[in-house]
Length: 636
Image (cartoon, rainbow, N blue to C red; front, side, top):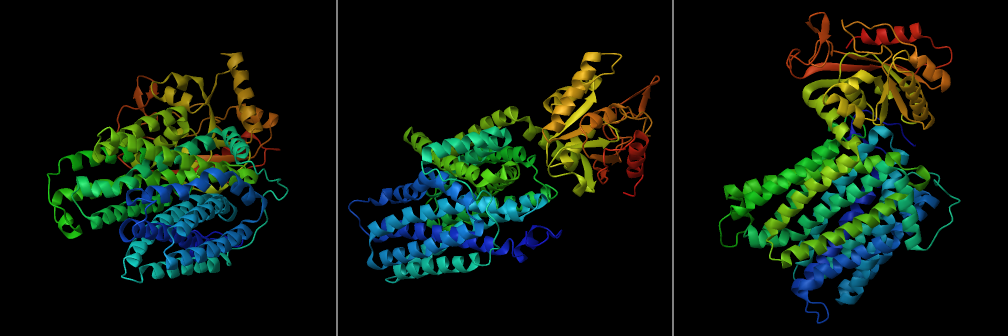
């Protein structure tokens, strides 16, 4: 990595060589793709009469040609991105872009639709080659806490580039007599600028230079999917992202019809819908870093999914209540109060789509094996293309069955709710992280001090003070990695919380005198967690404090690190004692909990203090207890 990360937020990346030239390259490439495609679509639809390409089919044919290479060549491009250094690949791809745009310029000057369609296919090849190297490059130059912010910037930049490309393409091609020539020069200029930007991308070593290329796209795609499936969280994130593209493609493809047939607007209104949608995606992508505390926070995915469905359904209701009207330009459209609800729904559903997609991209980058990362992302591109094709076919089927465009939006919003529910039940980690996010943002003002001490990779034992029933949920929200908890078996009998901890795959432990079999099974399970290189959390007190002070530590944690020595990370929670979920109210002689919801007030300040890792060799219970006690009394 050429530069050390800064703590001033994601926008600081735009001033650093490791990110800024890459961002500019990606931005210019996306802008060029869309300027070229949209200008060609307008030219064939409005300015030329081509016997073998009806105007009504132009957009469909251009879109199909552009997406075809994603299906055929993604597996090969993923291998190339793993075998060769990323900067080398980017420069070679941008050299190809200049050649393709030079051919396209000749096609625009000669008004040769056949040549321009070939160039659409070639630009699809360009984007297919660039996709895997783009997303595999980020985790090589960004640290884990920067991945969400970096991906957010890339997603924002991509959609802004799409918007600007479409607008520029439409304006340039509409210029009388010289429109095609202006488009030709603009496309060539953007390709050259992209090549200049990529020259500044820092060079790094290849992740798998000895890789032998398998040129069979079918067998290689299958192999990549099998690699992804070995990491279930990665594979299901691939499916989740592909579903987002399915969802988004329905809206993007239907904006012209929606503007004309439902909103009674002209081409300006259709462009306004695209602008609002792009701004929403960009805003949601940028918000991810702020809402995730600079970590990969997949708890935002359910939040995004809920918003996508809620605002899609409300968009249907808002559009269904619009009365018939003559065709309006954008000024007349904005003068109607009811139209603002439509625009707000569209903005919020696209914002939620940004919240939904960025954490998934970051999770794939973080959890994919480095040697296969580009190939897994290539498999993601194939799935995205197939899902977008399926969305076009399904939208066409619904429209042929006399569904209105508004009803298609309603259908996809309801389908999103079903798909999201299935995914979150299948992968409880998303739902649990969402609960942790809600608890740490909407119930408490939760802050983590010393988060850098939580290891990004490798096995470790997290040892924390035990103050309340929600301690595991807050610890889970503080770590970008999954945590496996060793917990008192009696907690599993608590309504709701017991179900929650079972979803967490927590390890129940009972005293040896009470249940010797469960006692030994818990230590065997804990050892397996550490052997797999995961994080294991234990509350050494063995139970929730009854008076706000730490109890004596049990010896279980020492048995765990003796059987599998791993760094021990001391932790302490501050501000939870006396809250709704802690034991404080006395009923008879037994402390109880959860009897006064607002006992400490809403948005009570809660801190998690994380100390530096302790070496397991020679560590004693008194030393560990002293370290955690110091963290408990550390200034907040």
